[in-house]
Image 1 (cartoon, rainbow, N blue to C red):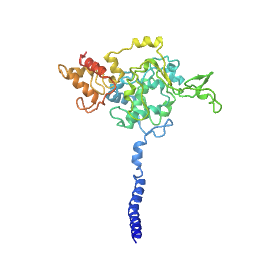
Image 2 (spheres, rainbow, N blue to C red):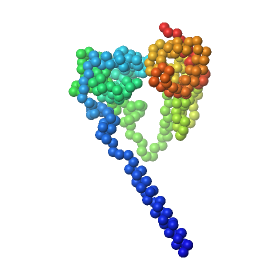
Image 3 (spheres, rainbow, N blue to C red):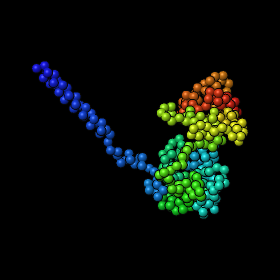
Image 4 (cartoon, rainbow, N blue to C red):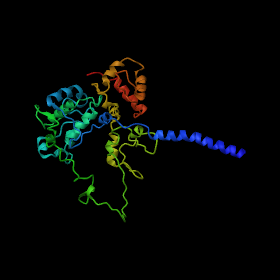
Amino acid sequence: MSKLIKLFFVLMSLSVFQTPLTEARDDYLNVGRPALEEEIAAWDIDVRPDFMGLPAGNGSVEMGEEIWEEKCTVCHGSFGESNEVFTPIVGGVTPEDVKAGRVDGLIGNKHPQRTTMMKLPTISTLWDYINRAMPWTAPKSLEADEVYALVAYILHLSQIVPYEFELSDENIGDIQKLLPNRNGMTAEHGLWDTNGKSDILVKACMENCNTQVQIYSSLPAIARSAHGDLRAQNRHFGATRGADTLSEALVDPVRDGRRELTNTQASVVAKVDTSPEQVAKQHMCLSCHGVNQALVGPAFTDVAEKYFGDEDALVNLFNKVRQGGSGVWGEMPMPAQSGPTDAELRDVITWVLGLEKN
């Protein structure tokens, strides 16, 4: 009798707990709902090279110039030529490039810096990027007509269209035929030359391959420290770790060790600029702060003026830069800066506090 009672209670317990668990699992599988059309439309805003997704609209060069001066000059300069914050947008193209469809300055690295308009093969890419990501402080805030106007202004600065021009969804396809580097996106060239052929055209060995190939990537020696210490910027979990690009600058990593410095590299190491201003450039401080001009954050000279005579300024600014924050110079937050070493950060802040306005 006792065994039957025990069996009864076991079965009862299974029936009691099984239903809620089953229901919970079904509920979990049905979490969420189909996206609404307006929700999909809010995300589905990309514009393809065939102009699929391009909204109707128009904008003149004159209108674009006004918007540019208001929202774009702080990072790109009045004529799109500034490299103080980002790589220049305009420059390096000629009327001959417009005719040829291939920017001559890209061949053999004839131009010292590659601008956006030198590389751009499709006008839809420029329209799409401005529409989704600009201005940097307020992405997706531009109306379609404003985007058309800004693209028209950039085209004018690149000597592609006259000042009286108006760009629209109806004539943008014609402008595509005038891009200086419209023929630049080809598969005829590769990263490497293999026996006179592009590497992307070489037939890969698929069987009985005796050649052992070591694959690794590295930055040119002189550029390893251009973006600060990559190891400090990498995630702190998992298997991936960044390279210490400051203390090991100018050393090319290989798969099973590191090469010794060549005489050329050693001479470059001896000439590395470790001044506070160079350190600020390496850690991207000057991407958001101009020395004499406010960009995303305040000008360094304004910071020096604000804290002039403050004996605690060095300590307080050191902690603010390390921890990040907002509110002192506006609502735009400054992320915590973990890249510079303590000594580097002290040197940079001391340099900033000693600046005077021109």
